[in-house]
Image 1 (cartoon, rainbow, N blue to C red):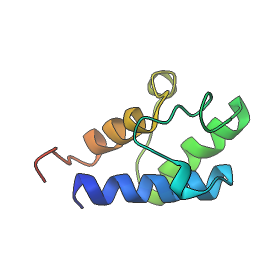
Image 2 (cartoon, rainbow, N blue to C red):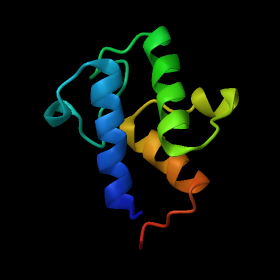
Image 3 (cartoon, rainbow, N blue to C red):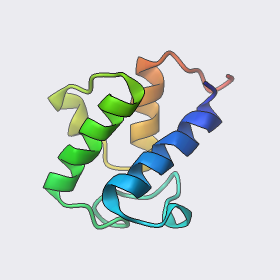
Length: 85
């Protein structure tokens, strides 16, 4: 999987989990400010990332994930996806 494919997959998971239009999600979108996610939805989103992508996101990592880009970066690191892929 390339970084671009990962970004698209992450957007798809966000759209489905938060019931937002995928077209409204950008790499700079803030989960709370732009996508209106509350704390429970953020937990659901973390679980969706873990389930769909076969990864584990630790609690201390969750606290640092504020934007779509933060999520992509954290997931890419776990999946060993480089920017150049």
